[in-house]
Length: 324
Image (cartoon, rainbow, N blue to C red; front, side, top):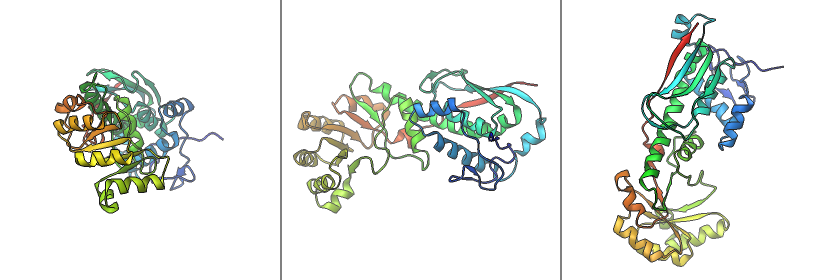
């Protein structure tokens, strides 16, 4: 039996019960994403089931167990039409498949046609996505879709500014774990759309020895040895606050060193001291205006937490251009 989408008035009467794939109030099954959309998400490194669960919960939050009162009052039940998601300001787009998922999960009668691709630079006034079908679910889904699309596009846009600022230096812009709970995979995807690369996704896929670990272990060398003994095959980065700690990390065998709050002259000194024996990552207090000067010291990476924790949303809106 084919699953039917939940009506806009009931799709989010409560959150999804993840183990059953149904709304927790039993109002109906949550539809699977269409195979084409699911395939695009998978190709982008995003789990379609995670997007499905997250979007359904986001719709639940917006409807809060009730209906979209304004849309129910103003839009005839059988009204059909077409809308366009339009960039109000220039930037880099990210999150179009996630926005599509919002419309799909509210009504599988809504058809989405992308007019741009994630990672594209877009101009003010450029149409990014058309949505057509029943007007009621289009309008009910509007804010949830735009919240995701504007947020992720903002991250991609800011990332691209950093990437452009260091272009030609050989340095790479990386993100951090400073992400919103529940949104890490999507926010790091947006960083990739902007031309950046991802640092570790979790505490378990790579080790980063920070100052508190050094304090607990007694020294940089002791912390390095302890992590290597615990996880010999795991990528390991060592945070250093001074050039003396850099020398200690090199002596311990570190091949990736994070230079925390080093000024530009000390970054250059660390590059000379390391002399290619380890990769170096500048972090802490970095600013876009000085990014190129930092990159030109010869460091390999710039770690920029602001990509995900401080990116302003890109202004995107939905215009209903045709109703019938």
